[in-house]
Length: 131
Image 1 (cartoon, helix red, strand yellow):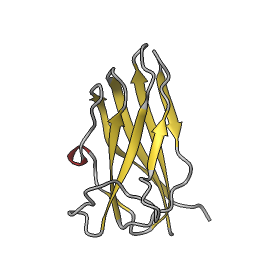
Image 2 (tube, one colour):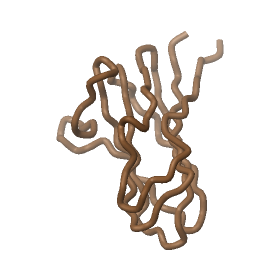
Image 3 (cartoon, helix red, strand yellow):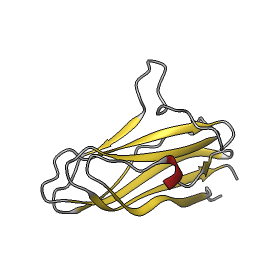
């Protein structure tokens, strides 16, 4: 029996400004009610001088309206961030390890840690669900 998987474009394509970030309003709501697994895919074009890359932050919600004011963290208080190293002068696409879909809803923010913009940035979620 095939395992249902659906992909959702959550953010983009957009330009993330130098040392800037997208906002929660830029991200589509991801409903994980029936999810058993989540994989994120980031794609973006880095400036030739890029050296610091981006990080993806996750913000959970119990109702899809009210989101945590700080990124999702583990019990030790360490933010659950996905750090992506740049590919200077090139477009990079990379997928995360599987993420446990604990919260009912999630939104994401792309944080550019570099002095140059990241163009054509896209964040996609692939969600595996129960039959």
